[in-house]
Length: 452
Ligand code: FAD
Image (cartoon, rainbow, N blue to C red):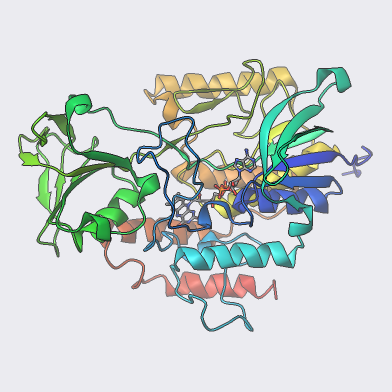
């Protein structure tokens, strides 16, 4: 095939956020020849992996005027993916020779090791020189008067109070999706006297000593936090919408941890009734019910909306057709292996912006999006699951890889993801310390030897 004659164009690109998504977006954009400014409101790279003891003053995190604490990481958190699977494709998450012995060398390490890995990544690729730290983006809007596709960004630095107003050719949004809590609806909650909170504000179990705690949810957080709290609490009960109405199961290995169906209602006297008919008196209800996509700075005249947690319209979860390729999002899909996917999305965005990789017409992108929406609707899948991938993530990654001209997802990574998931379901207590996929680990390390 004849090489493309399209000249490669370089653009001035703003990246919002220096978490795992923004770091790799910045690297790929610069590799492609774009000039990049990364806006980061915290004072270091790493996003949600920057653990802090601080929590928000509003334990449910619903007050729009609250001062936001970005991280949702709790003290005992260890990754739920093995490090070989989790890392960027060309910067493996391995224990590097020469790093301090104090680093957590476990296969499913603690949050601090993930942060250290992201810091290593930023250092290796000199990302920090592109980052404006302690600088919050307040507004992103089309700068129509400056020419088609341009964006106006208003930002403010912590120390200097004045607004900075700048024009960019393109914006890549990498602001993270674990700060704006979703809450379960509980009949009677307005007159219930107990304490309510969201897992976003959970850090350590000690404050729950001798208390009766009900957690809502069936995600990794509900699973981890219920076990964490059960070490000190009087009783821990997990309520879950997807459990059958008669569910009432004692967790093996614990004297004080039960699984239930969803909460039916709560009462003024502090009691709580589950759908399974059990009533208990409760001190704390913790919503481990996930988060909403939230782009408080983005002004698009209704061209990009969040509707029941569907961000749209987005072509391939990345480009809104109305603004493509000048506005893009990294990290929208969930139930995925995030870092390698961020890497592929970023490569695609960088190549599309430079004109090396073509995009379909606006109309064709819209047709594909509408077809996806109709397929979901016909299958009875609610809007809020639009960006859930799970099993389809590897097909998606391979499509991105084909656009970028890079190799598909490694077979070992796919298999490791599925095997870990199965082991986690079967052995939630021990899957992080005992495993059987030794052959996959060897294959991973063979691949990693390509990246000294
Ligand atoms: P973030 O890490 O949230 O980064 C976003 C950045 O944008 C932040 O630094 C923030 O300060 C900045 N920002 C936001 N708004 C603005 C603004 N207006 N102006 C300037 N800067 C802004 N993934 C795994 O791979 N393995 C795991 O085991 C795992 N466990 C997890 C456990 C928990 C409790 C949570 C919450 C997530 C977990 N994840 C895990 C998913 C994790 O979120 C992703 O791996 C990844 O870190 C997300 O990166 P991000 O860059 O999209 O977002």
